Length: 68
Image (tube, rainbow, N blue to C red):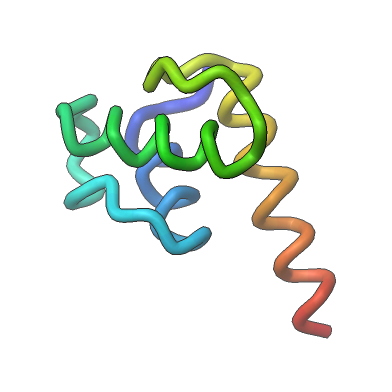
């Protein structure tokens, strides 16, 4: 199961501001999740799910491939 810390790190890598990588699902982290969802045409609910984290991982992998 994905962790809050991983989610925070992925969001930060993608340019969002979830706050510190402290493992707490704070309102700031939920706002960053919602912003990423909105920017990617998803329903904005601020929830951390396995599907959300899979999408964040995929987006980060895309950035890494593009940087090569």
